[in-house]
Image (cartoon, rainbow, N blue to C red; front, side, top):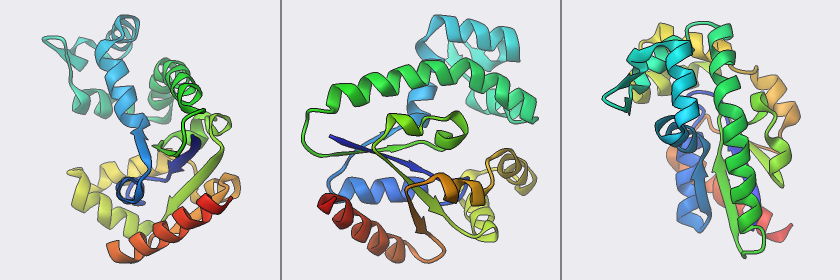
Length: 196
């Protein structure tokens, strides 16, 4: 299975793109969902998170995502600390999954917001960046994310600049238009990768 990482900043539309690729026939996976699963089930990781970010991150054994996010995205240092705990486990999981599906026909699209920041691009055959103008990304994140604009701006500031992402991605989809526009662009990309 050809593996393609779908990455992009907050509000870029990468989740919408992944949904479109699923409709078109891709096998899909979310690195964020895997990370949340690891945070819920890996005893060593749970212990480290409690020690680093506080017992309140778990209530009756359940991960309190909003509490962990508020603490981990407070500063670049805190974000790096959480990433240092989660990324090695996430990388191992993705590597095993991609290796296990290599011989299977088809295309695997993995949504991975932190792909470039984490240096995970070597795990994939190709990387696809979904991007949009900053003001559009902020509008979408406010509409969809249930976060105050100041939190969204802080999270965007912690992410790799779009120019650097563009330089490192194999392919770029501009997502400044409608959902229909995104569907057309993703469909064109889907046709292209089948010919490669």
